[in-house]
Structure formats: structure tokens, C-alpha cells
Amino acid sequence: MVKCWKSTTAKCKNSMINLPQNIFEKLTKREIEISILISEGYTTKAIALKLGIKSNTVSTFKKLIFLKLDIHSEIALYKALKEDNLIVEKT
Image 1 (tube, rainbow, N blue to C red):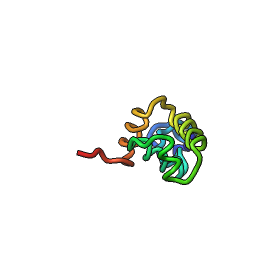
Image 2: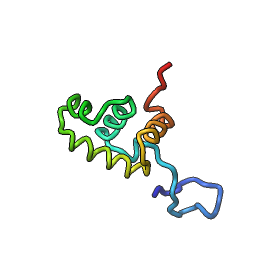
Image 3: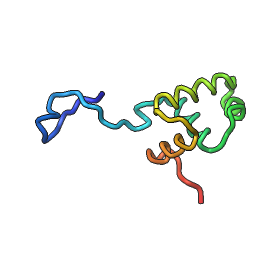
Image 4: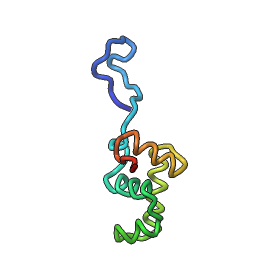
């Protein structure tokens, strides 16, 4: 929930409302890093090797990322990252 500070509508003034948040506000730096690697096509094992962590840790991060962003697939993750300009489509 984000407080609505400036608004022209009386309904919003001094009330708590749900405003869309970008990925930076929802995920930690490590979660963003893993999200980007997932969207680039890295496997869980490859991410683990690249970051020097266990595969189970990557899997746990992936579950948390999907939960926090309310998504259910790697394609949805890719689209969310693209919308927030965290990745650029390669041509």
C-alpha cells in the first residue's frame, strides 16, 4: 500500500490506496539479478554456478520472485522485466 499524497480526487486524499509498484520496489537486488538471468534463458543450475550458490537456493529465489510478482511462468517474468525496462530485447 502506498499513501496517496497529491490527488485531485477527494476519494484519494489522505487515504491508503494500492498503486502499481515497479519491480525495483518489490524485489531485492539478488532477486532482480536472478530474474534477469532467468529471462536470459539461464537454467537453475547455470545460475547457481554463475552466482556461486546452490541450485536449491536459486529455486527458492525463483518461487519467491513468482510469488512477489504474482506470476506463474518465465514468460510472464520476461514480460514484467521488459515492461520495467530491466531487459532489452535483442534483435
